[in-house]
Image (cartoon, rainbow, N blue to C red):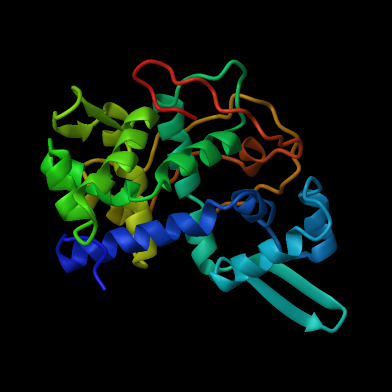
Amino acid sequence: MAITALPPDTDADIARVTEALAMITPRWNVRILLALSGPPLRYRELAGKVSWLQNGQLHPKLKSLCDVGLVERTEHSSRHVTYGHTDRAAALLPVLPMIVTWAEEHLEKADRPLPAIEQIEDSLTLLTRRHAAAILWVLKSRGEVSGRALARIVMPSSDWTNVYPPLRQLVADGLVDTEGTGQPYRLSAAGEGLGPVFGALSAWSSGQPLTHAAQHPVWGRPGAAPMPKPWVSNQSLPASATSSAVRAAGASRPTWHNRDLFSHTATARPMAALAAGGPRR
């Protein structure tokens, strides 16, 4: 069943990307995937790499990642079970440094240098707001759009005023701009900058190489390189996760290492105040 009033292929594209984001956004999922970069690990070995998880938290997380096809459980014998990436997970990992590239350019600066993993988690929080993907898709493809017109497209079966809470949130997050009440909405510079990320997620979710991101009909930029520039994490982190090269079919990828993303000392961080004109973490 259609989720918007957009053409079926666009509607399906948005649904796939929304589902892809839902796979990796839950707390600790990205960190677990990074911990599994490299040879498959036994449960105890993996637990040692994600030691901040309390007893009983890792198993359901692993089960959910297995259920969505990102982690593979291999039973070698009754006493020997390992966990590792599926091919789908390996193909998804190069999207993470693309998210960091966007975050470093568009998120407001924190009081302290942030590990890249926290920038990824902050960014995913913004991108998984309810109706965010559909609203951003429409604004990217149609430019300035009124709230009423957005409602007819994004949530055709709901009262049109229901579009305003998610719109106000996207404005507060710095992804959408407006001149004020009654004025049309448009993407901010940060919203426009999401093109490579959404294009890559669309390519991945449809089983295509990430190089296809540049040809996305909405988020693509034909002739532009789809991958971000190399980046280095601001913070020196312990080399607790083994670095491994992840192949993206035919794509050149940025230089990045799991130790640049992964931290054993993760703690919950309060939301930073919204910087003027910038997205909120």
